[in-house]
Image 1 (cartoon, rainbow, N blue to C red):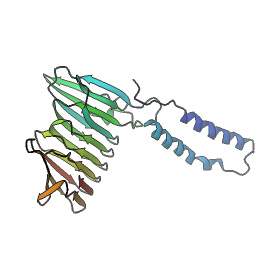
Image 2: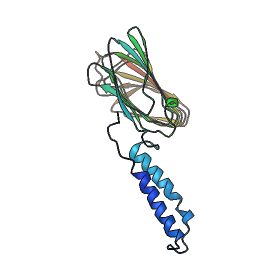
Image 3: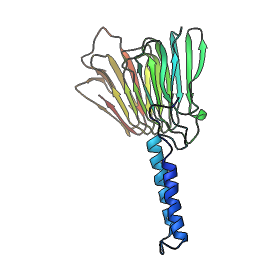
Image 4: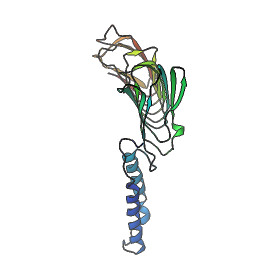
Length: 261
């Protein structure tokens, strides 16, 4: 089923028509001494506009919507290796669904079930290399999730404020990470970016402890109105609800900055 917005393949024909008109005029000597070869950058304009409008370079390979029912599942693992594709994750409001959203062509989540636990897998290798549609996923909010997510160029935007996390490991190469902390986690959450920035947000009232480490070229900037520094590189959220469980997060990087808000 096509994703939410589907545009017809009008850009390629338009670009080809424009180039054909110029070539025709040149053949009939109607464009003077104009160098037709100089038009080749127009192809880059067409390709760039196509990707911006459709999210993919190849016609018909845009994003697809999907949904998987929960059934008897009581816990789940989401494993994502997106390469250069951006990933967005949030909580799912609709009951009875395990996961729903949009995936790039041919990368519908693989599914393995073991008793009441399910393992969902999305890998860039299953997607045409010219396909760049974002992966957007909403996860069931009433069961614990293990999230294993990696990219090398893609950005990660994960809103876990409505999720229960068993574990989360989010790693990027050049891409940025934007992560909103969950109200509950059963183990330490790990966020790591080699060359990107990390934006970590703690909703008001959530109990969060953040340990930051990295090279001398990785800076940490904590909002003093939101966090108290309890030790070098260790920050605790202010105005926390003491009845909530403590969520521990470890962030690290080589180049770039971490922003705690």
